[in-house]
Image (cartoon, rainbow over all chains, first blue to last red; front, side, top):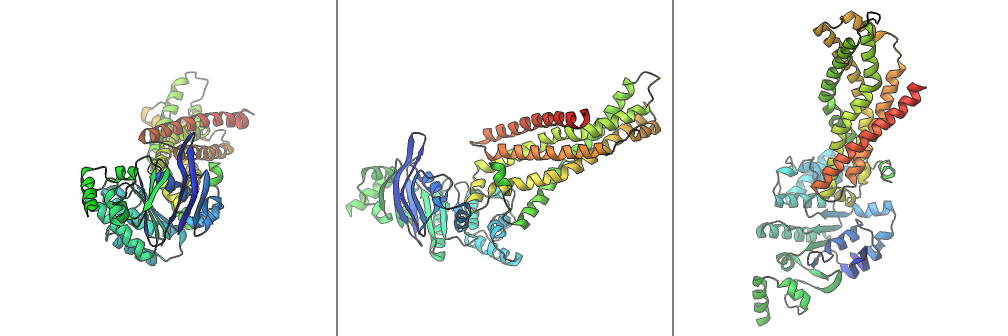
Length: 253
Length: 236
């Protein structure tokens, strides 16, 4: 479980995160949603320590991450898997080397054990036998899946996904969403997904935090969000004509 | 501050050693062709120009060999070669690390709990400081060989005069001095280029700017330090 308590962040005079609190539950797909520039990615970067927090607490099973020393932070980070928006795969390494990288760095597994684990992870993301391909040889969806394989290689307790569906077609997006959700359930991970893709919200949103201009504006789940009357959230969720029709249909019932 | 992070204890020696070997190949072995070509040509040019500069019958022709050896050992094979390597290796390092920064690969390392500065930069510094002396020594030999070939091919001087010249008044410490210079330049090139790459912000344009800055600053510092070393060790 990860809990954020009253976190705030400013860049110069501009406050981008303003007093946000939320509990991200273990074994659930927790979503942070909001418009572009609403503070989603900053919130995630504050949580993993890529940005320094101005105020508040980020508790990993009770340990306040920002106040920990370098070694303690590194120990927590070893339990974190992260799927970056662009994949962030290492270009000079094959898929096998990419997925094996955290195992090389932090485990004492034998070569055979590592290869087994790599193959297991690549199987999980449906990239079986693609071990020797380089990131440059992969499509956008394959890159995301490969990055997901690397993120889960070292059995993470926490999985962060930064806009896992950006730039993907709807069908591939659903594949990625389902993968994230099944991995979350199977390994009982605390998963945090940042998205503004409404398909994802409806598909996998077990617990949702809606950020509006850096403030926590609404919390709920994928069923509740379709019935919301919060005006800013309604504008965000039902921005498209199709979603408006969905909204009307849901409200008629 | 960055160097403090770079020189922290490696998290996994085996992985670091593997990286160092990779970088020795990437930085050193892949630079051999350009080092060889430039050294042979420069040795030939120095010898040939020296031959034409000596028009007094009072100056013996073995001075050509002597001049070529002194030029190659004291300046070309250390300073000028490192300037060339600053262009090749420095821009490569800055653009590689810069591209990793803008594509979030460095963030990915940090999230994994890896000291990204140490993992990315330390193997490059260690590899360059190890392999540059070999490149310098190879350059010296090839430069002198280039001078010999030029003399023989153009009949500007005889091979025996040249060989006598390169042995005349030989002071072995100058080779050590040249190697020591190249080790310090290796550190300058890799650390400066890594710094510019590591702190790249923005996109492809900024990666290009970092790469240019790495080459420019490395070159200036190489020349500055070469001047200081010359004053300290040769001038005195």
